[in-house]
Image 1 (tube, rainbow, N blue to C red):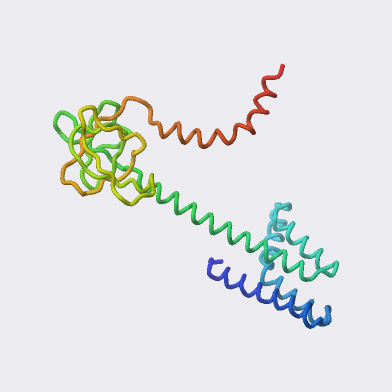
Image 2 (cartoon, rainbow, N blue to C red):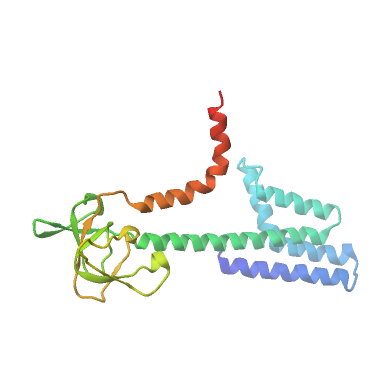
Length: 241
């Protein structure tokens, strides 16, 4: 189901659920003849697909999952006479699923945006000639040329030229960063893969660094440091004689 239809279904089910609450607490109508059909209609709108997925998974051999638990909770609430709770469980579950899908789509867009800044080629300067090759075929100490509008393929120091770098993917700032050569060079470091703006007409000649890319260590720290409290007891148990 498309996100738009899912929102429409969720809105209709929530409206029926709220109408049932008004009928129950304001007008105090009969529970069996009026409220039960209203809450069943709301549950079918909100949780009908949950029950369907639960039955389908059971037929496939996947019995215990969140769909079965939600179905049992709702059916149990109907059996004990808590009709509003049965529809409310389905409503809050669907809201959670909607927020989860929205966060997942945002994460996929962010990953796709990061993949877009990945360099596809490098202009290798070799014996006075420019050779277009893969970044994997370039080694530390080689010199590459970055033309205006191209992406910086690898980490290095600027030997010649000047330009402006689009660092928005790293810093979030839209202003370009001015970059030019010095006697000792300008270390690019974490600026790997960012596109070079065409603010200056000169090209950049970059000599690749001969030390490991610090990006790898920073990303490893972000991944493994939060896991240390979980890994430490396992490591201690393995070291125990």
